[in-house]
Amino acid sequence: MKTVLSGTRPTGKLHIGHLKGVVENWVDLQKDYRTYYFIADIHSYTNNLSSDKKQYVLDIARDLLAAGIDPSKSVLFIQSEVREHAELALYLSMTTPLSWVQRCPTFKEAIADIRAAASESGEEIKDESGISTGLLNYPILMTSDIVLYDADYVPVGEDQLAHLEISREIARRFNNLFGDTLKEPQPLLAKYPKILGPDRRKMSKSYGNCIYLSDTPAETGAKVMSMITDPAKIRRADPGNPDICNVYDYHGIFGSSGLDEIKEGCRKGTLGCVECKKRLAAELTEILDAHRMKRASLGTDGDISDILGEGRKKAQTVAVAKLNDVKKKMGTGLL
Ligand code: TRP
Image (tube, rainbow, N blue to C red; front, side):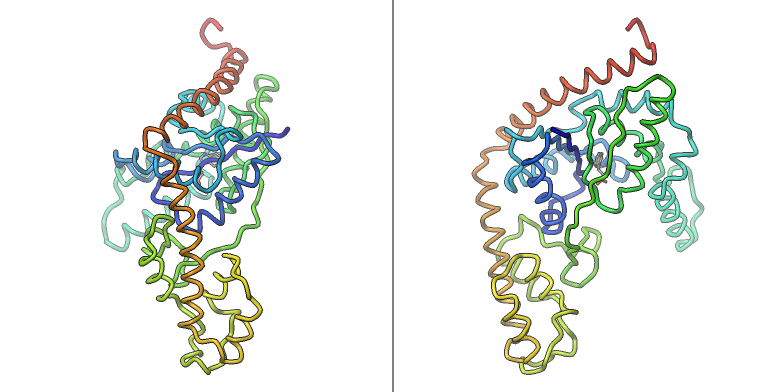
């Protein structure tokens, strides 16, 4: 059986874009692969130094479990709890040329963002501007996450492809220097739907346009009613174009029945946007209600911690063996 591994940073509550784009894919992969999933809490400090991440971590774990990550099939754990991740990253930082990480597009983007913000406000760019050596080392820690478990495949979004390419290079270089030790991971690009926010911008915490898994039915309803439809369809009887309508996209993604009928009704002017949105709100609410009930059935935060603790033990057994192999190959200490 091949191994799949992936991680998610605890940067906030999960929204429906995460559910459809990432989590449902993770759940499916459990059928055919040995799966390791983890919450990349160390990585989250690269852009957020807040010290109250614990509740996010527990909530994300709960959401993952509620969505169908099954602890009897997957090893689910917290990155920082398996310290071998950090230790291996340190060794890999010794074998990775500085230019490789400096070239990384996400690193260059972070620097460009900070420069742009500074020039807008006319401020000088200071060393404390938020570019830490941890941000520079992001791909090295990510490589460590992956190679510790001999992962064959890493399901990632397009935005992470560059990281994965560096991971492959880092693994290859280590093998060239010290002999075959680390497996080169392959990306597994999910063909997941892009879910836009109600305002048609990318769904993102910073835009305040997320439909969260934890929203109440009233909140979900209000967000759906605010969605942008075809601007040419003002009255019910006006013919609309479903191809440019966010609500229609959602109907497609969330598996509404009667998609053809919705399309036809919209085009012919027999289905109005308000009614169309009400149908969507009802369907989304049903999905989210089921998720909420599943979340609640998982018990206390202590119960979630116990599951993560079991995951840590399983992960650590594998990680320790790989790290020892690396240290032996490098000839560290008395190993
Ligand atoms: N970089 C990923 C993200 O920002 C999170 C992550 C950390 C990850 N380590 C990983 C993903 C290892 C896959 C494999 O979403």
